[in-house]
Length: 125
Length: 107
Image (tube, rainbow over all chains, first blue to last red; front, side, top):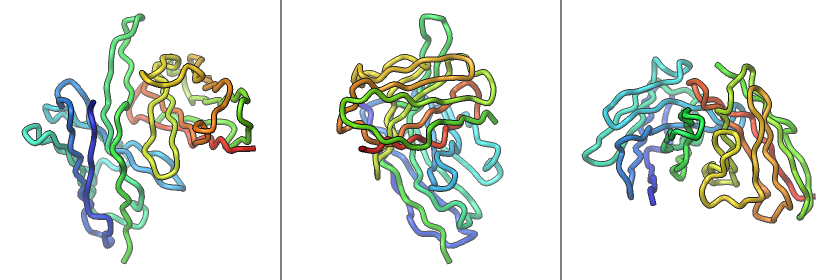
């Protein structure tokens, strides 16, 4: 079955760029959406953005000016870059696969069905 | 953005209890509602999508209902492995947004 394995730097200084990578195994990137989500005790789960296999992206407007999500289909990987980090970006970051399938009512329902293990990122001077 | 509000924020229950968690959207989202379970130190796990469709492999004691703005997650006969935090998430329109979570603890 599809598995996601993520990694990246866990300790950053303010103004640095956060960089995380998520590798997909057991399945293809095609036809799916590849998401980044973060979690903090204060704000809970926050969706950061997504990319599809062809590189089309959709970002949360709250972070849009600082976020870049890229895909490398040849490596079955996608990545997150978040620039100019502050303490407010301290969180656990997850990658997740997004799928949408047609149901009996002919509508497509989207959900995130496979998640990476999470990476704790701390921003501190 | 669509705001998702869960209630209660936490609850205490015993093994074998029936538990219901409520999620309310700030606007109608039809049936574009997912439920996740999260245990400490782990990633969220998809339980239910499209408001009431059980994800493959999820026990049938979990069920979801509702449409429009009001949704429920019910666990019949709570098991030890069900003590966790539960989140709703709307997939009606991006940005996808989550409820603040409901922690189910052992009484």
